[in-house]
Image (tube, rainbow, N blue to C red; front, side):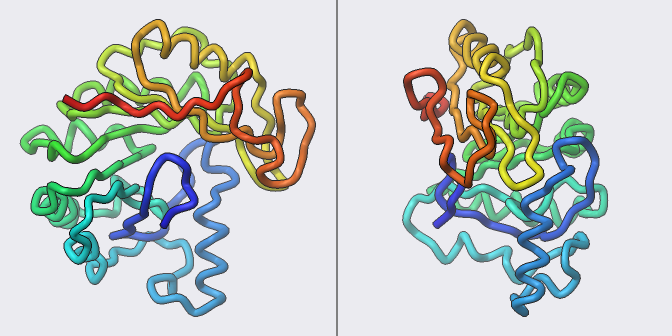
Length: 241
């Protein structure tokens, strides 16, 4: 099982990555990869260097019960060094396991319309991009170019007020603050701004966590700030036809 609040399990057909934007600065996956390497865990011999893991491709086939998978919690599936033929194999697995739901999240949004120009997104694949600041909003129109049944935004860590968002064609938005000793604070009004826009646009909203800093701006230990935004917890998911 996964500790990530909005999924059930993780599936990592690739591991390792490289920093591309401010949201990567304190990457949890990089820290975890170092720990796994120190423990001698298979698949992390190269620490956090991008590594294809073909031996993991069939993992979802071994599970019959319908499961929600976050694809590549320890990597980015659309990293420039992941070849298209390997991407094809990953999406082929999704197609032959229609009982599962796959959540694919990337910061390399530019590859999405390129890869899917002559391919279709499986119906059981939710496609998303990360947006941590105003500059990274430019990833959203690239996502919107792809005909996915569910398109979503992961706004975590939320590093500044995003202003007005264009949520046309977006079905789900996740917001969260940063964790860890070096975490950057998220202000309450920034999260409320996104939440209110989702409400007005009829987009499902999921508030993942406050992270190290709470709404009062005080740093506390892991998990101490909870998941409530205002007076409630937001655990909304996109409505599926």
